[in-house]
Length: 293
Image 1 (cartoon, helix red, strand yellow):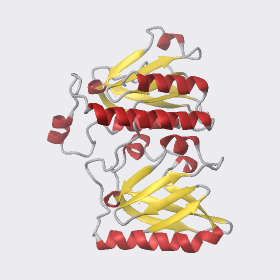
Image 2 (image 1 turned 90 degrees about the horizontal axis):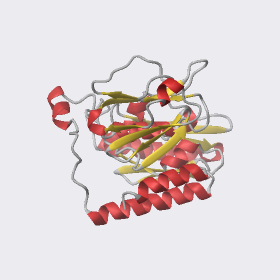
Image 3 (image 1 turned 180 degrees about the vertical axis):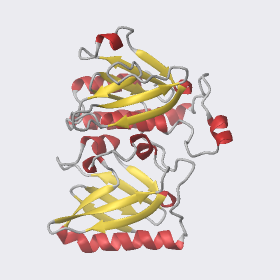
């Protein structure tokens, strides 16, 4: 087993998977703190590296293309501070980091893990229910439906029809992109039979993002939806077979579902106490969980 503990987070490798836990330092990004601990199976990795600097360095994981719904939904556009597969390493821990890299690389060679793309997700995506508010709206996802609600800053032409509820079976694609320069970003859902070329400002299936602190949280909603859509690299016949149907899927066993929801409540409470979630965001997210208990 290899382990490295830094203010930025803790990475542990047990030979089969890496467990990535974000640190509690104030410089750890809101997205990483909200996403929480990640478990990355060895077969999802394409490589690992250490970049050394004078005062600090950076451990980087390179995942196989198509393995992670978060990277798929964001198209590699997450800024470095929000990338959960990077860890800032202090200079006096470079030796530990080098040992960590050697252990992971050795396991990749021993298990003959290929680095080519995959046609199915190897990570599960963020847990649901999930809710985020940024830009001109709030996006919530309970695993079966996306709900878009608008705020006072939403363009009238877009908000006039009220809140939107999109069934997962009607969503064919999801995209998150950040604001860049003078161009605003968005969380956009492509809905079957309702394709639009309208800018996010006017698209009722998009939340427009303006480059503020909470924009990256919308990427988590995108990833949770992406994880439940057919994989874009899967053979056409497999994508058709995996396409979600409009009817509700069978509910998981009551005990497993109840325990998962209780864990999510505890996570939300921690994020609220730490100031990551505002009172309003905490209330919305908690209500979404309680509705499923």
